[in-house]
Image 1 (cartoon, helix red, strand yellow):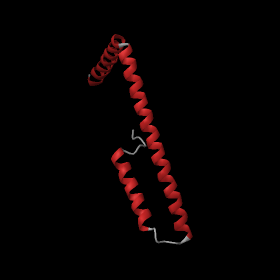
Image 2 (image 1 turned 45 degrees about the horizontal axis):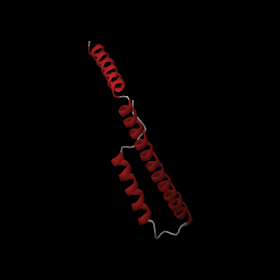
Image 3 (image 1 turned 90 degrees about the vertical axis):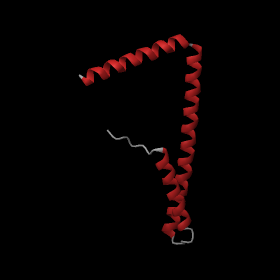
Image 4 (image 1 turned 30 degrees about the horizontal axis):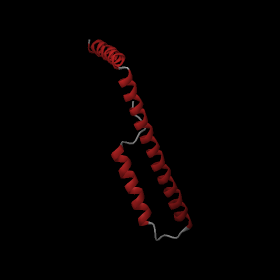
Length: 96
């Protein structure tokens, strides 16, 4: 099953290509081109804002997880051991 996500490096290339397109069409004054440039610029800004929000949420989640593990180290080890055993069991059943 293929996910509908863009890997980070492909996202950077997409942004670079979009910015290059904006630069290449900077001299164009045709109404449709100007409107398309405005939409593309707005889309780039929204994408950057979304990316920043996702990064902030990821950092906040990592910090929360770290704090929970520090507050409950033995329970965390138990949960990790249980999940590892379950994954190992499922993998071993799949290979047979």
